[in-house]
Amino acid sequence: MANEAASPVCYAPADELFACAAPRIYMAEQYRKDFPVLDQKIHDHPLVYLDNAASAQKPRMVMDAMTRFMENDYANIHRGVHELSVRATDKYEAVRGTVRRFINAAHDDEIIFVRGATDAINLVAASWGRTFLKAGDEIILTTLEHHANIVPWQMLRDSIGIKLVVVPITPEGDVRIEDVKAAFTSRTKLVSVAHVSNALGTVLPVAEIIKLAHEHNALALIDGCQAVSHMPVDVRGLDADFYVFSGHKLYGPTGSAILYDKREILKQMPPYQGGGDMIASVSFKETTYKEPPHRFEAGTPAITEIIGLGAAIEYVSTIGLNRIARHENELLAYATEKLRAINSLKIIGTTPNKAGIISFTMEGAHPHDIGTILDRQGVAVRAGHHCAQPLMEFLGIAATARASFGLYNTKADVDALVAALRKVQEIFA
Amino acid sequence: MTNAALDTDLRDLYQDLILDHGKHPRNFRIAKNANHEALGHNPLCGDRLMLYVTVDDDNVVQDVAFQGSGCAISMASASMMTDMLKGKTLAEVGALFDYMHGACTGETVTPAGLAEDDVDRIKALAGVRHYPMRVKCATLAWHTLQAALKNEKKVSTE
Image (tube, rainbow over all chains, first blue to last red; front, side, top):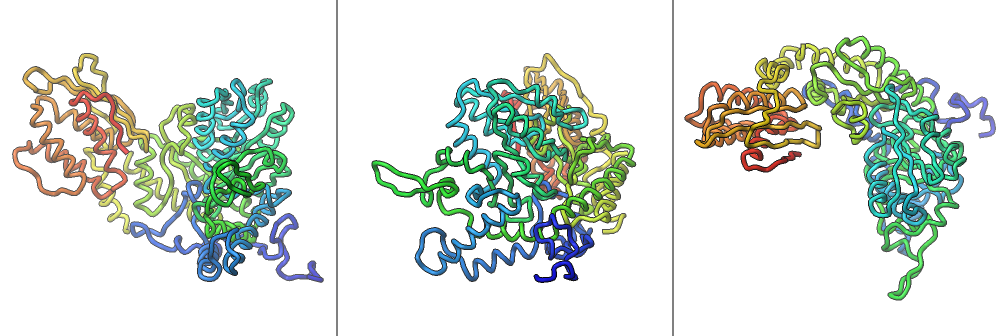
């Protein structure tokens, strides 16, 4: 590219990863065509998919990448001397670089492939937690955490006697930095919080939280499941020690997820699971382990799914996370305005610091009834406690209905949601 | 789907009878002196209800009451059930349970010997058979009833 400035396709801001491929105008209708599943009717209504926070749909490109890989290159990795194994290994390992660039990590070997974000947090709890924590040590969480960022720490608490300190949220659904500050003691060893709340959409002040953790000689784990698909994430900029996210919420396949783990911490962590592919040598007397990241990838991994995750990251990066964020924030603002106009509806989580998610309840209609009535009109939302029961208890509600946006949603989707909600009002009038 | 077809479809589930019981549940109270009680819970959706049943020495249901929270279907089902059970013998209660269970899972034959009023109410609840994800909402109260009568304190449906 000798003459980049003159390139007719190079409109995008320089901070985009695949800047030159990104179109200037955000074309949700165009991107929508990349997702075959969206082109169908549900109960005779065009599908309006607003359950992206539970799992996002997959673009053709991801499916093609996986199919192509299986058709041409598939074999087990890190083993064979044969051509296919070499190719499969190269492609699998190349995804580490894709992920590193995507979250701006320093090294490929800080990227560990796991099967889900739940798996990632359990890995940190079992390996780092059991090695570095002692009875009486403290971990700070917040009220709004997903069960996946609560239960692994409770299991650790019950087994080695650590203490969990829970930072309350404000009625608006915010986590205030002074409340986090107040939770630290001399025994705090880790702060483990969501980047974006899956139930409310709140964006947490993670940069400040991480800074606080480091000032108190503690580490910080960020659950980025709801963040990576909605905004650019820079783990070095944040100075996160651990950052986890799942692939399936990022338009990639299930069974693919990432644990980012700083090299100097990773080096001190013992293996999580034992088995093949994580060893240097095995005898019945003694086994030595590979260096990270392979030490943490016992057994045959989800090879094809990781290839798919790599393709998904390329796909969203080509569109550009900055513009996806901008588009979804516009949708969120539009939806917030429209939903506010429904008098029997109450938005749960009213902080302006939100990303891609709008949770609500309706007078006289239980979230499950809302979910059923919307479904009959082709609108897919989640209804329930969103795997955040402590948060629901804190809010004094059993459940909410939640609409969550993806890069392919449009204002027309929001309009369909609003029209469908009018039917709920009508039935429960 | 046209708006009219949508209405017909949704009204099959959300019939007036159901909406009325969902909004104004009958026998919604704690019955301290009940001799059978159980907590019904659907962890998947968070619905929970406490059911109180008083059965006399002749195996006749003297009183049924409940308290809890949940969707319109689960609240209506519990409310309608409490209305139906009072004055029935345990054998009649068993027959009603079997009919309810069958009706919600696709059985269309109505057994003989049931009160017409009860059949109508169960047919209304059986609208859930077209909504597989909602069948558990309609049957929660009934499974809780079974647990209470068997003196099991808790029942969980998923």
